[in-house]
Length: 113
Length: 115
Image (cartoon, chains in turn green, yellow):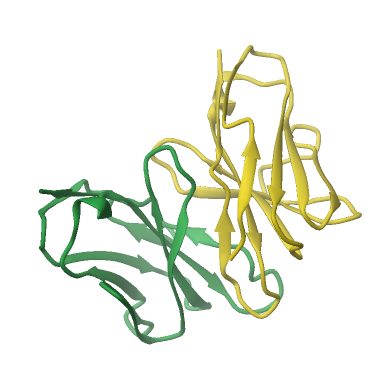
Protein backbone atom coordinates (compact mmCIF):
# COMPACT_ATOMS: atom_id res chain seq x y z
CA UNK A 1 0.00 0.00 0.00
CA UNK A 2 1.39 3.40 -1.01
CA UNK A 3 1.75 5.99 1.74
CA UNK A 4 -0.50 8.48 -0.06
CA UNK A 5 -3.21 7.54 -2.54
CA UNK A 6 -4.82 10.08 -4.82
CA UNK A 7 -7.19 9.40 -7.69
CA UNK A 8 -5.39 10.72 -10.80
CA UNK A 9 -8.62 11.51 -12.63
CA UNK A 10 -8.95 13.19 -15.02
CA UNK A 11 -11.94 14.97 -13.48
CA UNK A 12 -14.10 17.12 -15.72
CA UNK A 13 -16.83 19.41 -14.30
CA UNK A 14 -18.99 22.25 -15.63
CA UNK A 15 -18.24 25.81 -14.57
CA UNK A 16 -19.90 26.66 -11.25
CA UNK A 17 -19.84 23.09 -9.92
CA UNK A 18 -18.55 22.09 -6.51
CA UNK A 19 -15.38 20.03 -6.86
CA UNK A 20 -14.23 17.48 -4.30
CA UNK A 21 -10.65 16.23 -4.40
CA UNK A 22 -9.43 13.58 -2.00
CA UNK A 23 -6.42 11.74 -0.67
CA UNK A 24 -6.05 8.84 1.69
CA UNK A 25 -2.91 7.97 3.60
CA UNK A 26 -1.56 5.16 5.73
CA UNK A 27 1.04 6.85 7.97
CA UNK A 28 -0.63 7.91 11.23
CA UNK A 29 2.36 10.16 12.01
CA UNK A 30 1.31 12.68 9.36
CA UNK A 31 0.11 15.87 11.01
CA UNK A 32 0.70 18.60 8.43
CA UNK A 33 -1.41 18.53 5.29
CA UNK A 34 -1.08 20.64 2.18
CA UNK A 35 -2.77 21.09 -1.16
CA UNK A 36 -0.83 22.35 -4.14
CA UNK A 37 -2.14 23.51 -7.51
CA UNK A 38 0.06 22.94 -10.54
CA UNK A 39 -0.71 24.49 -13.88
CA UNK A 40 0.73 22.88 -16.99
CA UNK A 41 4.47 23.53 -17.31
CA UNK A 42 4.60 25.41 -13.99
CA UNK A 43 5.82 24.58 -10.49
CA UNK A 44 3.40 23.56 -7.73
CA UNK A 45 1.72 26.49 -5.94
CA UNK A 46 0.79 26.12 -2.26
CA UNK A 47 -2.98 26.52 -1.93
CA UNK A 48 -3.89 25.35 1.55
CA UNK A 49 -1.99 24.30 4.64
CA UNK A 50 -3.59 22.67 7.67
CA UNK A 51 -2.36 21.14 10.87
CA UNK A 52 -4.05 18.07 12.38
CA UNK A 53 -7.78 17.50 11.99
CA UNK A 54 -10.44 20.04 11.11
CA UNK A 55 -11.47 22.42 8.37
CA UNK A 56 -9.83 25.48 6.90
CA UNK A 57 -11.48 27.87 4.48
CA UNK A 58 -9.90 30.37 2.11
CA UNK A 59 -12.25 32.02 -0.34
CA UNK A 60 -13.72 29.35 -2.61
CA UNK A 61 -11.41 26.67 -1.19
CA UNK A 62 -12.00 24.49 1.86
CA UNK A 63 -9.51 21.94 3.14
CA UNK A 64 -10.76 19.19 5.41
CA UNK A 65 -8.70 16.70 7.41
CA UNK A 66 -10.08 13.60 9.11
CA UNK A 67 -7.18 11.95 10.88
CA UNK A 68 -9.34 9.17 12.32
CA UNK A 69 -10.12 8.04 8.76
CA UNK A 70 -6.72 9.09 7.35
CA UNK A 71 -8.57 11.09 4.72
CA UNK A 72 -8.15 14.63 3.47
CA UNK A 73 -10.26 16.64 1.05
CA UNK A 74 -10.15 19.86 -0.89
CA UNK A 75 -13.45 21.43 -1.92
CA UNK A 76 -13.67 24.10 -4.59
CA UNK A 77 -16.93 26.06 -4.71
CA UNK A 78 -18.19 27.87 -7.80
CA UNK A 79 -15.43 26.32 -9.90
CA UNK A 80 -13.96 28.44 -12.67
CA UNK A 81 -12.11 27.53 -15.88
CA UNK A 82 -9.02 29.09 -14.26
CA UNK A 83 -9.18 26.29 -11.66
CA UNK A 84 -8.25 23.80 -14.40
CA UNK A 85 -4.96 22.34 -13.17
CA UNK A 86 -3.47 19.34 -11.43
CA UNK A 87 -4.05 19.29 -7.67
CA UNK A 88 -1.47 17.59 -5.48
CA UNK A 89 -1.94 16.62 -1.86
CA UNK A 90 1.13 16.51 0.36
CA UNK A 91 1.70 15.66 4.00
CA UNK A 92 4.42 15.62 6.59
CA UNK A 93 5.04 14.14 10.02
CA UNK A 94 6.15 16.21 12.99
CA UNK A 95 9.62 15.93 14.45
CA UNK A 96 13.17 15.77 13.13
CA UNK A 97 13.33 15.47 9.38
CA UNK A 98 9.68 16.40 9.15
CA UNK A 99 10.36 18.73 6.26
CA UNK A 100 10.08 15.70 4.02
CA UNK A 101 6.81 15.97 2.18
CA UNK A 102 5.07 12.88 0.83
CA UNK A 103 2.99 13.70 -2.22
CA UNK A 104 0.07 12.08 -3.97
CA UNK A 105 0.33 11.65 -7.72
CA UNK A 106 -2.10 14.49 -8.37
CA UNK A 107 -5.62 14.80 -9.77
CA UNK A 108 -6.04 16.56 -13.09
CA UNK A 109 -9.10 18.83 -13.04
CA UNK A 110 -10.78 20.45 -16.04
CA UNK A 111 -13.53 23.02 -15.53
CA UNK A 112 -15.57 23.37 -18.71
CA UNK A 113 -17.09 26.82 -19.48
CA UNK B 1 6.10 33.09 0.77
CA UNK B 2 9.16 33.45 -1.50
CA UNK B 3 9.86 34.15 -5.15
CA UNK B 4 11.94 31.36 -6.64
CA UNK B 5 13.56 31.28 -10.07
CA UNK B 6 15.26 28.40 -11.85
CA UNK B 7 17.63 28.30 -14.80
CA UNK B 8 17.39 26.85 -17.35
CA UNK B 9 13.64 26.44 -17.70
CA UNK B 10 14.18 23.56 -20.09
CA UNK B 11 16.97 21.78 -21.91
CA UNK B 12 17.59 18.91 -24.27
CA UNK B 13 20.84 17.10 -23.54
CA UNK B 14 22.76 14.22 -24.98
CA UNK B 15 23.34 11.00 -23.13
CA UNK B 16 26.57 11.00 -21.09
CA UNK B 17 26.69 14.77 -20.55
CA UNK B 18 25.93 16.77 -17.39
CA UNK B 19 23.59 19.68 -16.72
CA UNK B 20 23.68 22.13 -13.82
CA UNK B 21 20.39 23.67 -12.70
CA UNK B 22 20.37 26.88 -10.70
CA UNK B 23 17.84 27.94 -8.06
CA UNK B 24 17.67 31.52 -6.80
CA UNK B 25 15.41 32.79 -3.99
CA UNK B 26 14.53 36.44 -3.37
CA UNK B 27 15.10 36.17 0.38
CA UNK B 28 17.26 34.19 2.78
CA UNK B 29 15.80 30.81 3.66
CA UNK B 30 16.98 28.11 6.00
CA UNK B 31 15.92 25.06 4.04
CA UNK B 32 16.26 24.39 0.31
CA UNK B 33 15.31 21.14 -1.39
CA UNK B 34 15.54 19.47 -4.78
CA UNK B 35 12.73 17.30 -6.16
CA UNK B 36 12.16 15.24 -9.26
CA UNK B 37 8.77 14.97 -10.95
CA UNK B 38 8.50 12.18 -13.47
CA UNK B 39 5.44 11.75 -15.71
CA UNK B 40 2.62 10.06 -13.85
CA UNK B 41 4.62 9.90 -10.63
CA UNK B 42 4.60 11.72 -7.32
CA UNK B 43 7.12 14.43 -6.62
CA UNK B 44 10.15 12.73 -5.12
CA UNK B 45 12.64 14.43 -2.83
CA UNK B 46 16.21 14.06 -4.10
CA UNK B 47 18.09 15.88 -1.36
CA UNK B 48 18.21 18.73 1.10
CA UNK B 49 20.73 21.41 0.17
CA UNK B 50 22.62 22.41 3.29
CA UNK B 51 24.38 25.76 3.41
CA UNK B 52 28.08 25.32 3.99
CA UNK B 53 28.05 21.52 4.16
CA UNK B 54 27.30 18.45 2.09
CA UNK B 55 23.73 17.87 0.95
CA UNK B 56 21.58 15.21 2.62
CA UNK B 57 20.42 12.66 0.04
CA UNK B 58 17.29 10.53 0.16
CA UNK B 59 17.31 6.81 -0.43
CA UNK B 60 18.01 6.02 -4.06
CA UNK B 61 19.91 9.23 -4.80
CA UNK B 62 23.69 9.62 -4.57
CA UNK B 63 26.10 12.53 -4.60
CA UNK B 64 28.07 11.28 -7.60
CA UNK B 65 24.95 11.36 -9.76
CA UNK B 66 23.34 14.50 -8.30
CA UNK B 67 26.00 16.79 -6.81
CA UNK B 68 24.47 19.79 -5.04
CA UNK B 69 25.97 23.07 -3.95
CA UNK B 70 24.58 25.72 -1.63
CA UNK B 71 27.08 28.53 -1.16
CA UNK B 72 24.69 30.88 0.66
CA UNK B 73 21.12 31.21 1.97
CA UNK B 74 19.57 32.29 -1.34
CA UNK B 75 21.17 30.07 -3.99
CA UNK B 76 21.66 26.39 -4.81
CA UNK B 77 22.62 24.26 -7.78
CA UNK B 78 21.79 20.68 -8.73
CA UNK B 79 23.90 18.87 -11.32
CA UNK B 80 22.55 15.85 -13.15
CA UNK B 81 25.67 13.90 -14.13
CA UNK B 82 26.36 11.37 -16.84
CA UNK B 83 22.79 11.61 -18.03
CA UNK B 84 20.72 8.82 -19.52
CA UNK B 85 17.19 8.96 -20.99
CA UNK B 86 15.86 7.78 -17.60
CA UNK B 87 16.91 11.15 -16.16
CA UNK B 88 14.37 12.92 -18.37
CA UNK B 89 12.13 14.63 -15.86
CA UNK B 90 11.15 17.92 -14.31
CA UNK B 91 13.53 19.05 -11.58
CA UNK B 92 12.16 21.44 -8.97
CA UNK B 93 13.73 23.34 -6.13
CA UNK B 94 11.69 24.28 -3.11
CA UNK B 95 12.25 26.31 0.04
CA UNK B 96 10.89 26.36 3.56
CA UNK B 97 10.63 29.97 4.67
CA UNK B 98 9.87 29.51 8.34
CA UNK B 99 11.48 27.28 10.95
CA UNK B 100 8.10 26.91 12.68
CA UNK B 101 6.10 25.96 9.61
CA UNK B 102 6.48 23.08 7.19
CA UNK B 103 5.10 25.00 4.23
CA UNK B 104 7.27 24.59 1.15
CA UNK B 105 7.26 26.84 -1.89
CA UNK B 106 8.38 25.61 -5.28
CA UNK B 107 10.23 27.10 -8.20
CA UNK B 108 8.89 26.86 -11.76
CA UNK B 109 10.91 23.75 -12.54
CA UNK B 110 13.46 22.71 -15.15
CA UNK B 111 12.20 20.36 -17.85
CA UNK B 112 15.03 18.07 -18.89
CA UNK B 113 14.98 15.77 -21.89
CA UNK B 114 17.88 13.40 -22.45
CA UNK B 115 18.31 11.91 -25.93
